[in-house]
Length: 310
Image 1 (cartoon, helix red, strand yellow):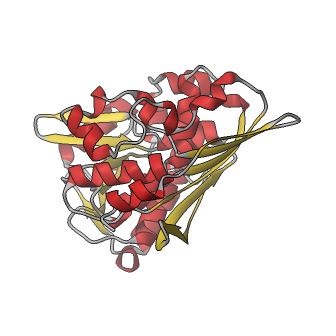
Image 2 (tube, rainbow, N blue to C red; image 1 turned 90 degrees about the horizontal axis):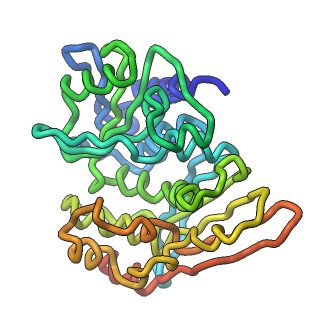
Image 3 (tube, helix red, strand yellow; image 1 turned 90 degrees about the vertical axis):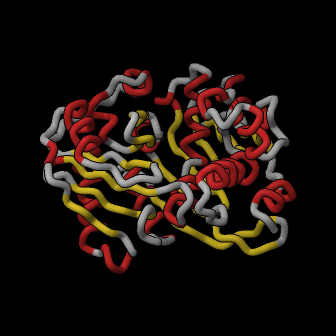
């Protein structure tokens, strides 16, 4: 496998080349690191969100949008498919890098995580990257500065000038697209958490509605999680049958059936306090090669309509 950081840098170059068309704003920091604003101080857009999701998966996933319906109303959906679920989703797209400082609060995802390789996913997948440039996608209401670039460079083992930081707020168009694109990732992650070998997941496709944009990050966090938990649909092709397959969908959680605004409020908006089982897609079909095909869960369009303010 080619370096996923190399592949992600090529996509970042595309964002730099077409920044005006994408409504993306690039900045070069004093350290030489590059920040690309996909939706913090700029509007961004749907195409920017698609490219952002491609960067987060290091070019190992196909990301598209389509029109669908939520409770009878036309709503755009984002779809993601990959034949490299372990590397693309667990080792890249997963938001596994916490940026928790007195001066900054954010979440990092993308191939920079594979240069550090400290999370258990990397040992399970058996993938670690080596490259002299790196990309960490940053979800925050603030643009990352040189202190964040230095932190990333130090952990990833690259020069600060080799750090690229696509940044976005969840309460943006690109943020809603990127969040919806995680339906497949969350399905694979739920399986991984049960102990299922990610090497036995051959391919995965997922879709979810793109949540309406609101600039309040708490409201955006609730809506985008509702979009996946109550509107996300995935299809997985796996090589081994296992009881763990029925744990993929969000209805396996005791909190199922409540909008995320209520769930978050009950846990004082502490993301870490929530049970991991709530973070899954609404519905899943699992095709066991040369075996059975299972279906689990189902969408709740009425709850989505309420969450989206219809």
